[in-house]
Structure formats: C-alpha cells, structure tokens
Image (cartoon, one colour):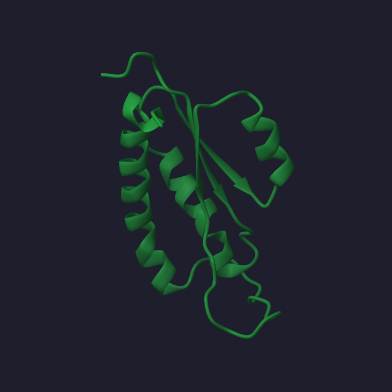
Length: 115
C-alpha cells in the first residue's frame, strides 16, 4: 500500500483531424468514460500543448502520455486529413487502455519512485 496517494495525469495527445494521429485522444476519451483510481486524472489534450503544460504545473507525481507515432514512409510525408482511426489503430485502442491501466497500477506504488 502506498505511503501517500500518488497524483497521476494520463494525457492523450494528437490531432483528431489527422486520422490516426488522434489515437491518444480516442484512448483518453474512452478512459474518461471509466471510473479511474483515486488520484488519477485523465485529460484529452488533443493538440493543445499549452493546456497540457498548464495542467502539468498543477503538480503530479507522474505523467502518462498516450500518443501514436507513424513509422516508415518518406521524410516529410504528411498524414491524410479526416476524422476517425484506421481499423488497425481502432483495434489497438483496447490494448493501449490495458497498458495505461498497468502503468497506473505501477505508478500508484511507492516502488515506482525509488531510484
């Protein structure tokens, strides 16, 4: 049992208008619909980095960022515009939520903060 309640921010980032780039936001929106452990706040930061920066300044013990990175392709290639996720990324949302749950459980322990 932790000595004190850890304050953890889970932030989904990405641009929902850029198809798969909105993955982090989709995960955050689905997490927001669930009951989270005490001390855990979920934020859909979208592409608003300034809002996220201000929220972080409130003081958290840990930050979990949920984002997607496109691998492959040519340098400078821009993603397509549009709403929604590709079927491959839509299928990965539940896996991402499970990983966030595992990470939160670990970050709620005192052991996670020992060097």
